[in-house]
Amino acid sequence: MKQADKGTIVVDGQELVITNPSKPLWPELGITKLEYLQHLMELSPFLLAHCQDRYLTTIRYPHGIHDKSFYQKNAPEPVPSFVRTAELNGIRYVVLDSLPTLLWLGNLACLEFHASFHHVDDELPAEWVLDIDPSLDVEPRIMNAVSLIGEALDRMRIQAVPKTSGATGVQLIVPIKRGYTFAELRRAGEFVGRYLTEQYPKLFTIERLKKQRGDRIYIDYLQHWHGKTLSAPYTPRARAAASVSTPLYWSEVEAGVDPREFTLRNLKERLDQHGDLLTKLAPQSLDHVLAFV
Image (cartoon, rainbow, N blue to C red; front, side, top):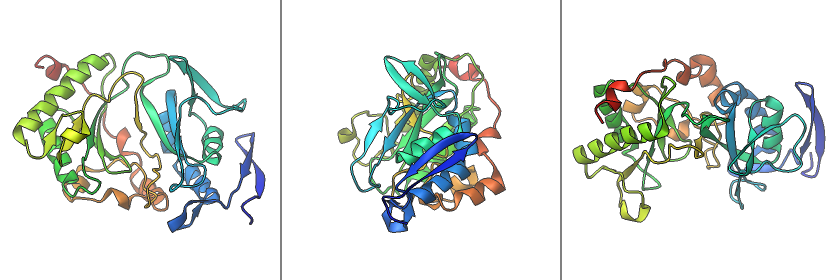
């Protein structure tokens, strides 16, 4: 099949034109656009569940992961009739809530999907997220650091699900009962960050400026805010391993699992076996924490 080829498929009653299906997107692994779209279909029940009814930002790599890329906030034109959009602060976002929409974006070489922390037309957070961001490209301490944060949260009677970012970091997802504000959760996040930096000053920092962090691991509680986004659970990432953002068991964190183990080519088997770990934790009250901080 030549790179200039294109074809038409029908998905859930919607007709989609697939262009350049043999274009290499992850060239070292030989993952073409066609294979990528096949993997998106496998991930779709899980990826859509965490993107639906949220404002979506994508990162597009028209010629694969090693070429130029750009963030896409405004819905790419022309927008098919089956694609839902929603406006926030003058930007017309795609709302990723169907398989045809996902494959349309995949055909445009959207390789990463970043969803808002809140639902469309809602001011309140849907969950609480702490972003644990290494300052080093290769950080062998990352899982030990996340384990220490998990232990601190346990002492505060907070349950979280660790999730690889799909790149170098890890996020801690805390399902919450509805009603908390972003400001309240930021206050709780700052408390957690300051506590850990005091306990482990050589390991953690809450310094926003990367140039002042040294080799310390950044506990980012500021990213969690209205209108901001983070890599969605089960999004692919434009990394050499074709890694995917994946929720983990705490036992995997404690064992020092490598985030690069979870990829486009093997994640379906894990999902078939374990399902979505993010759905296994019930929303919880943070009243006891907020009363203290």
